[in-house]
Picture 1 (cartoon, one colour):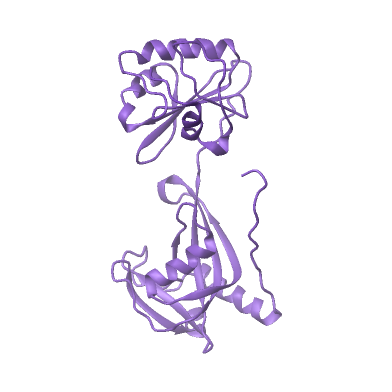
Picture 2 (cartoon, helix red, strand yellow):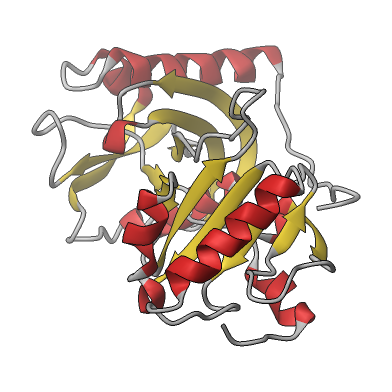
Length: 271
């Protein structure tokens, strides 16, 4: 097992999760890892390397130490280069928690006198819809190439990307799909559904955006049709889902009442 500087070990762990300090008292021949605020340990295979031949022995010593020291959740972030660790971890009671392109995260709950307090991985996807209405009371609408209902009309939008604010996501999606530039006006509505892609729940946040341009140039890869549609036609169109009609009705009611839901950006004092 190669030794790595403590600063690198700390950086290798999921920083939101831990106290930003490597374990100080780790016996020789065990994984060092990073202690989190829940009295758990995260071992990152890119920071603490171990040959496949030595891994079973080092893992056993580490587990014995962690059990004796009453450590709770043990996490192994296993990158592709250390994929040979995975069968041995599974044979020692570790379960899969989540995976991305370059790694899989496994965990084992050690205490026998309390239930496993392991948070589930992200179980909800976040999407945005953009309600863009011009001064002529026309709504920007799209019909997707691969729509669930062929030929149906909907608002531009899509999934929020990692580390992207949902307002920025809506503005980006409109420009990508229609080449129209916009600015934020108001939050309109939130739709929460279950049983969506990958078995996840789905949050869909609809925002009103003010158009800064109006000339449409659609994205042929995603969009079959795109147009400015009269709002009354949209509200009565047979190929517009009722939920989408309700978004527009809600927005029109906001306008009538002078209601606007703003967003404020703040900084968490720890995160």
